[in-house]
Length: 147
Image 1 (cartoon, rainbow, N blue to C red):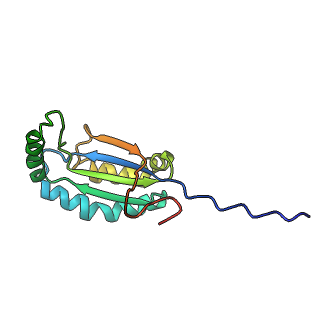
Image 2: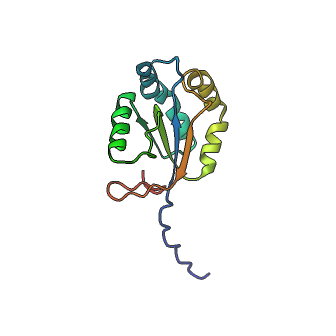
Image 3: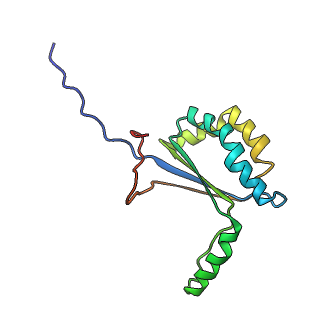
């Protein structure tokens, strides 16, 4: 039997960054929403995400008091058509494939969490998705082969 050479190691696969931009519901206090989305929700959501192979999950909170000064700065710079959106939180997920998010969103435990916890607090009638590859110019590069 001929010796078979071991296959050369494959380079890590570049992860996909999938971000969801969310607004809180009008009748929900911002601080209440912030507490829920950053302290209560993660302990319930993270185990489900990990089970589906999500490599990393981050939240970017966008306090209302940041928006007005940045809008004024853009105007001052002559960038009249630039915007500072009113999103309250951005959830970013680093995933191996788009199928990862599809599997997560079809998980009965995830559906129950979203129905009972997120829908009463987040305005699901409006939002924004962003999907692509994050290019890190400096700092830690995340790939499927690293954690």
